[in-house]
Length: 297
View 1 (cartoon, rainbow, N blue to C red):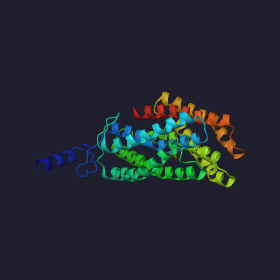
View 2: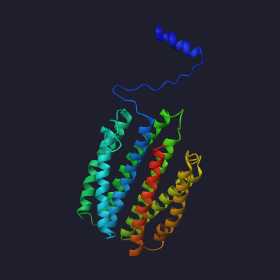
View 3: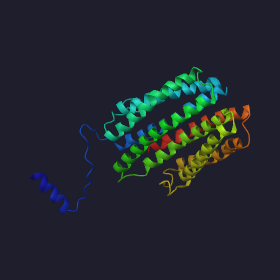
View 4: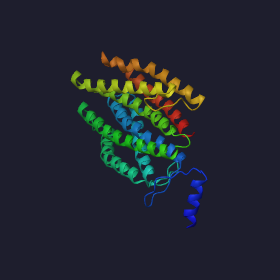
């Protein structure tokens, strides 16, 4: 009776009430700050799915072979350990265990694909993938891993928006899109490498088509992050520092695009392949720093 009286009093006095969605049995509420970091970390998984194929492909072409093998193994370990942390908690970010049923279901989907994919990555490291068809199949599998990993990011983004509706509901979206740029630069590098590895123009064609789509998406996102975009749901950058970095990323990308697009006319030289491999990793590090700045807000 006291609780009913208190509720009637609050309503009649005009006090605002925020009624959260009911928690499922065993579900633990998560803070907006932890969700911000989870969006960043889960978004990094998208990048790793493409980076593993890109580095394996470059190693096969003998482009910075030792460096790319190291990046391949590092990426495999990071994806595996992060996936466990997103489910069970812990890790450098000291996550609490995940309890949301929908999120856990998506993680289970990722785990099923990953169990097969990581075996193929081990084969690539051993040099057992040699033909273009081997790497094309590996790329197809990476796209399934990317799709499910992206579903996890979107799920966390939605949860953040629902929780932070009275604070900064756009921040989760900004972390999501900024983090996606890391994936797109790796995906562009992957498609360029597969086009280079292809034996015929017929084999090259689908990779060049995907490369162009990736270029277009990166450019649209880079412009939106730098200047805002209603289409992408991106407001103006939240700080002067992030605004400056996003503008620099947009300019840096413009310098890199001609190297990708030159594949439309002829394959890259050995020097160009090394330049592209180094540029993709250098750009990734710069993009990663910006995503982390968003996540710390």
